[in-house]
Length: 320
Ligand code: UDP
Ligand code: MG
Picture 1 (tube, rainbow, N blue to C red):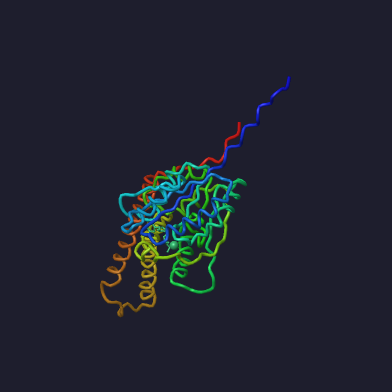
Picture 2: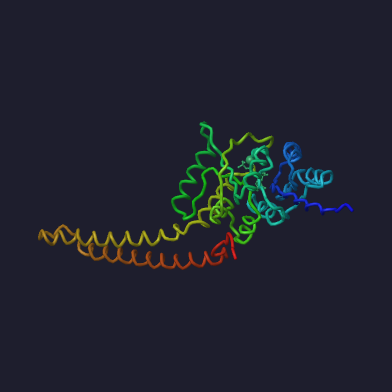
């Protein structure tokens, strides 16, 4: 009798979800989808593409729905209005189910050819594969403001942020779940991902030109993102009052020395009557008020940290 051995169970395919926020990109989605397909069709992994329509007012939704109709891998999530890039990314990351999640832009500026390398690094055990834009030498407004922003945020925040980091990154399921456990409203995902920890690697890339259309990051949106980053990742602005208060107290001490020097010289005639005491009172009172405001600032800082409801830690592994 011929014995039959059970076939070894087939290793389930790794599933990779691409999360792509889209806002008024009618002119680009079809082309960038086609470029994406060239990469994912050649991959052995199981891909899904989550397009998040961030309240587009042009024909983007129709184009996306047409893609979903002909390609089962495409999922379209339509937001009720324009919530912004970070919110749209969050919606996609919340919906994604895959083993790995890769977020990228819809405009072709994040080269899809990097996806296989990102997946390979995730397979090697990295939890976060962060793409970093390397600048060519030409200066532009965006590059100057971006490098100024990163040096500021790295000075005033306790979280180390990668300069030029884009929202083009791959994450393991564990990293995605950790990110999902941070429910804060003002979201600066680059910072939140840095704050999580986990095994990370940086992948440099050269950003290419937009396939079509214009940037959807208006100056106002860029400013709001910078504000979200600064105020969510630094309590330094709250402590400015306290430092100013200490400065006023130092000024009061200096003023005392200054006035005393007139008394030492025995020449108080040049001192305007009442100036010394009035100045002293003003400096001391301002100092005390600012310091007390600073204390209130510290408590507000603590409350702010609390209401963000970030987990106190992220667990990496448990061995028994
Ligand atoms: N985006 C979005 N909502 C917005 C602004 C932008 O979903 O309110 C999308 C946009 O369609 C693109 C990505 O976010 O896929 C990055 O935006 P953009 O390319 O305009 O930014 P830039 O590359 O100029 O920084
Ligand atoms: Mg872009």
